[in-house]
Length: 190
Figure (tube, rainbow, N blue to C red):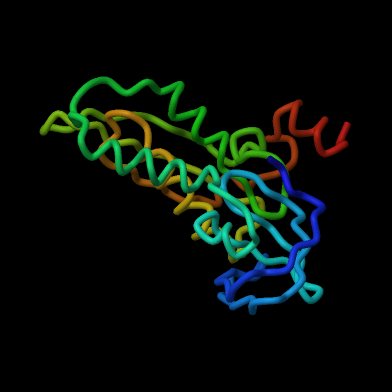
C-alpha cells in the first residue's frame, strides 16, 4: 500500500539521512512527518522543513508494515540455503535495478538513465560476479553511497549472484536526455 501524501506521527526514535546531503539524523518519537515518496523499499519524508530518507527496516517507526527492502533481506536469508552456482538471468538483474530509486525523484535509476553498464562474469569457483557501472544525477549528491548500497543489496538477492561491484562514475556526465521516454512522461518533461 502506498502511503505517499500521508502525515504520520513517528512511534519511536528513527534513524534517517538528510536529503541531498546524506547527513545522518534521528527523527524523534512523536515527530510529524509527511511521506513524500515510498519507492524501492525506503521512504522519503518531509520533517521540520527538510527531506529525509528512512530505510524500510524502520517502517515500524512510521506505523507501517514490511517494505520491499525487508522482502529483499528475507530473500537474501533464504538464498543462503541455495546452491551458489548456476546461470544468472540478466533480465532479473535489470528488473531488480528498476526497484532502486533516487530519493528525490520518483523514477527508478534505470529509467533515469543512471545505469551505464551491467554484466555478469562467471567466477572460477562457479559463482557469478555482477559488475555495474552507474552515475548520479549530480556528482556531489550525498545520497550516492545510499543508492549504491541499495543497488548492491538488491542485485545480491538475484538467484546465483555471489558478488556485486558497483562502480560510480561521472563521465559521461548525466543529463536529462539519458532518461527513458517513460521517465520523461512521468516527470512531465515532454
